[in-house]
Image 1 (cartoon, rainbow, N blue to C red):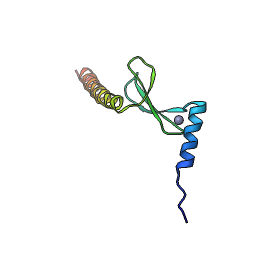
Image 2 (image 1 turned 90 degrees about the horizontal axis):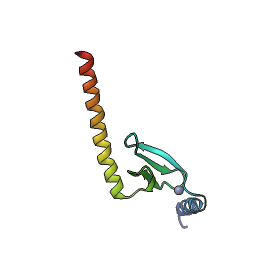
Image 3 (image 1 turned 90 degrees about the vertical axis):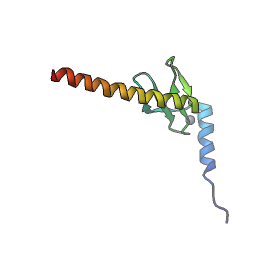
Image 4 (image 1 turned 60 degrees about the vertical axis):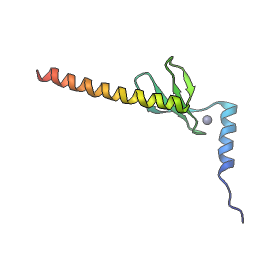
Length: 89
Ligand SMILES: [Zn+2]
C-alpha cells in the first residue's frame, strides 16, 4: 500500500492562485507602513516594499523587515520612556 502524499491539495492551491491570484491576509505588522502578508490558499508570502507596493517575499526582504521591525520596536520603547519621563517631570 502506498501512502497518499499531501501534494495534490497543495498543487491545487497553487493552480487556484495562478488562476485567481493570491488571497493575501495580513500576517505581521513590521512598521506602521510596512506589513507582511501570506496567502490563505498556498501560504505564499509577500511584503509591502519601501514604495508601499506589494512584492513577493524574498530572503533579502525578510532580512530587511526583521531589521526594520527591531528598529521600530526600539523606537516605540524609547518613545514610551520619553513619554513616561515627561509625564513624571
Ligand atoms: Zn496563493
